[in-house]
Image (tube, rainbow, N blue to C red; front, side, top):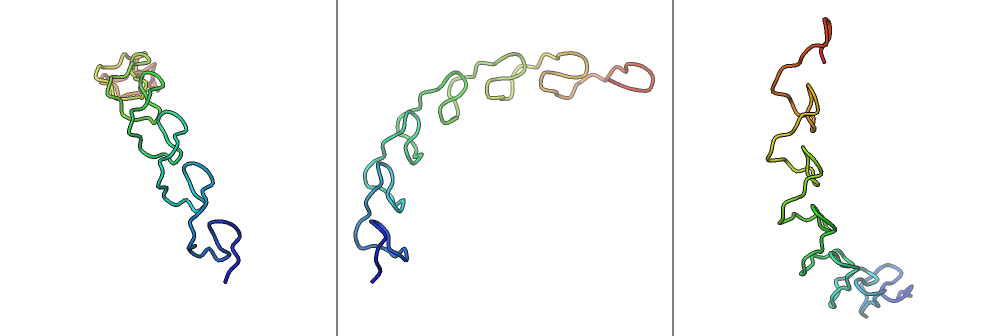
Length: 119
């Protein structure tokens, strides 16, 4: 028979007939599935990043702790973009000729600066 290195494993990593000694809440020496629930590290996540049954506490407008989809609309940072860079439903205000806040293609043609080059 093999001499085990310690609780939960043998020299050749064979399956043990005795149960493992967990290192702490949320995991065992061989990362086996726990029969007891995990202790969460804080709001929005658990030690093993399992799905929470309670809702997350958002950090601020426009995002949650785990970047989940929000049910409330985002507060835009300014014209042309939102906190999560979502597509706007209102048109952008151009910064000047030939470009907009999000560098979108312009609907009007370019005005050349002079002979031999364009903007």
